[in-house]
Length: 379
Image (cartoon, rainbow, N blue to C red; front, side, top):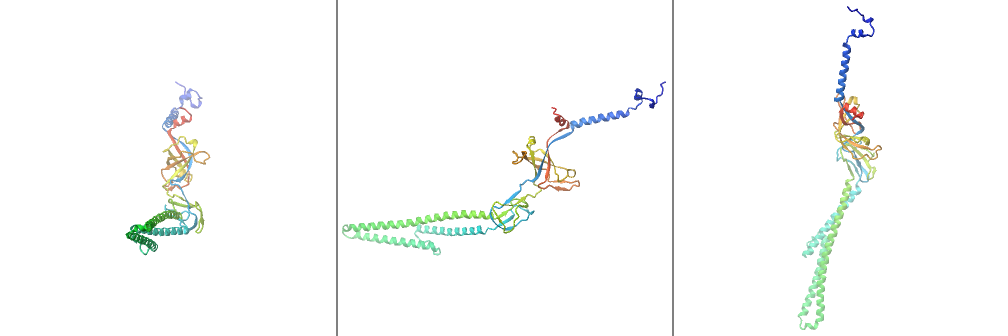
């Protein structure tokens, strides 16, 4: 029979091991093995995102519009206040246009007078062609002109008729050959009268044509001048080029003088539906970036612990670095999947133009094991 051994009398010998219960050690070993299995499973099947971190700003999809004056003058009326929302096409400001308006009226009066002269010239031409007085007496200048024309023409015709009659009478006398010198003179007079008559008619007719062409040319030149004045008058009213909120650049009052090209205000698109994020990506990180990559965005104005993040996609990458950037940065435009962030109570908070953002561009998603091996540069 074996001797009874008490545990307090034993030292670290085989007997102690024999006396210890093995259940606790088995549990520890099982837990360690289970953790190892889970660890391997996590390394193989767990997912890890590789990201490039950068920063940017919320900007409107439609660019901010800077409104300038294209005409110099005195401010007549102001139709806006700073911070006011305006629709595209709303009038913002008008400039005194008295001088240009007077010039417009003068040009229109000149065109009207020239059109009357052109009509008179046409009626005179028609009268000369048909050899009839077609000009109405109420058109005093043209009527007097044609009256004078027909008077001179009739006198020339009467002179021709008289000399022709004398020539015929001289020819009818007996022995007319004895007066050949007189016949020659009479014949020359008749030819000269015919020439004078035709020359006068032709000269008068061509003068009418030349006058009409000159008047029509003057009319076209005046119309061009009027068009320029009309276009210039449009510049005296300044309209909103886009819809949005007004931010004053120059503080103006009625009566102030402004010059051509002066920036007056800018209009910021106010719609929360048309926002995007513009990232500034250093060229050293731009090699793996491409369009349609997912981007996770955090906003310092909305703490991540309460509002979380917003996702988006890379829409456009400008092909060249930004001019003036010291670190050679590319502009990356990100299309947002929403325009608001919700707090823990579910209340939405809308983004605003100008908010800073921290961006995480997801370049690759893979297993944790592959990520570790890549870091260790193991192929």
